[in-house]
Length: 54
View (tube, rainbow, N blue to C red):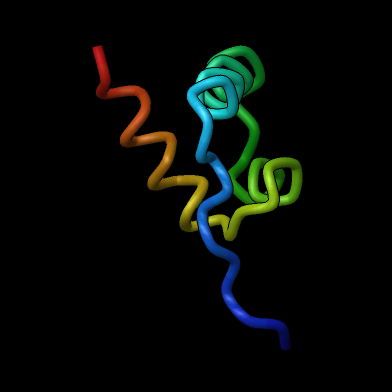
């Protein structure tokens, strides 16, 4: 089993693409994790954090 992955959404562009992709497709967090190189729980946390920003 490999170690946990760190958050990779460092740039504003990455965060914007992540949340727009989420709202467009509503993928399960396993899929988001694979596409954005995140653990599924981290993908869920990013979604919660980014959708609450104004």
